[in-house]
Image (cartoon, rainbow, N blue to C red; front, side, top):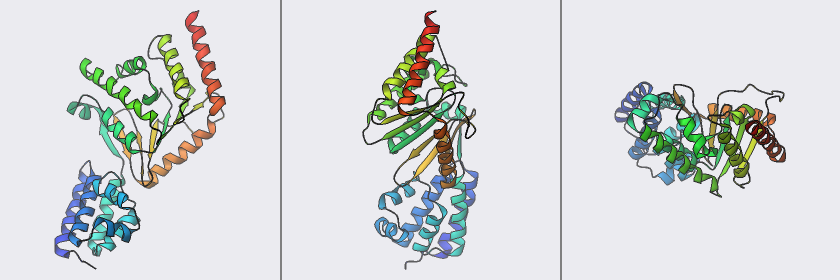
Length: 304
């Protein structure tokens, strides 16, 4: 087996591990080290994937930083390239840091670009299944232009007028992904979110009409959690799970910014909460009937 030189590998990996803990993107550090170890060992991606027991596409995702491998895979990788004990320990530290949720500050992120819709688009386009839970407002992929514009107008820090227009256009463009027959989108929306009204009643009526219409797509399923349902779990913040054949991640949006979780255990915790919330929801015809009842109620309020 090819052996990377110990004096050239372990100190550098250890240095990268220490650096990764301090930096905001340890995922890229782990990807770079795993790729470097493979290159130093002189093993092709196809051969290493076979030794580790993963697909070549999975290996490519790991080396590009798009996927964070679980620790057992990292250790199998280290063994396959002949890494020594010190190197394995440094990789453990990198993997632990890479599994820590990434938090991105809104103000800092928006100081560099007009909006963040392209980040979300990348997750949606990469995923095969998207599961979106929202307790406070209608998910962005389902929003009408007027609803989205009014939601963006409430953001803190506020958008500049030209940036708001760019964010709105990008959000609406993201919605094309709903029509991709190779994907599946599942939404869980609370009754409170369905009644959230960022403008006149007509805005909410149009928004409810859109949800009822979009739900008819084969790629989309909408579950509704009524306010008076007996709870089987607590209602947490909103979150989205992006699933692919070989990896998954979860994202949430606390007040200061966005949080992305790639560690398998934490993603699984989001899956368990999704299942619990799904048990509280109305689905299929029951959900459609509930949506129509809310829409009719809002219409009566708006016309009297």
